[in-house]
Image (cartoon, rainbow, N blue to C red; front, top):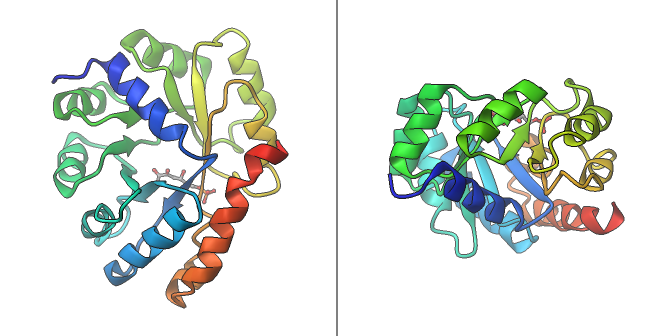
Length: 217
Ligand SMILES: O=C(O)C(=O)C[C@H](O)[C@H](O)COP(=O)(O)O
């Protein structure tokens, strides 16, 4: 470990500050990975989360990591072996739906900056105590959405969130307007049908529209 959890969280914060939206990607066909990443980066969304939900995810991370200007992270980190595999594949950050001591220890060991999930004040406080102040609010809409995140932020202003789960173009602006939100995660910028059709131009347009969300907030 060379990065303290606090330094690693600062690195996560820098990645989250790159764009208002982090695309949450489920890659079924690795041959799509590179072109998809190029379209999203060209559209203005450089930080990408590839969920470890498909057999091709690690290979996709490897392919996407070659795209200039991109920052490819691994999502759905659950166990320490996920962290090691993600790091070996070239992921430069990790995202998890929640946090366990074992998962945090593995990320610290591997120097993989983590965006750990929290849905309650207690979860956020536990992570803050360990040095993590940039967190994923998950599942955002199901956990009470904008009012819940605003309420959690009142006593914990030092914690910043990336709400994910149910965020869409209609509600993203309300999240991004909160003082404790830096960016949001969402899958809508890479819909399965457009990826399957290899319609990279349409995906680049969706990405570009997503970059405008902050100014609308
Ligand atoms: O697998 C993970 O670790 C995740 O990050 C789950 C994602 O947050 C949601 O799948 C994104 O949800 P939607 O944008 O509502 O589709």
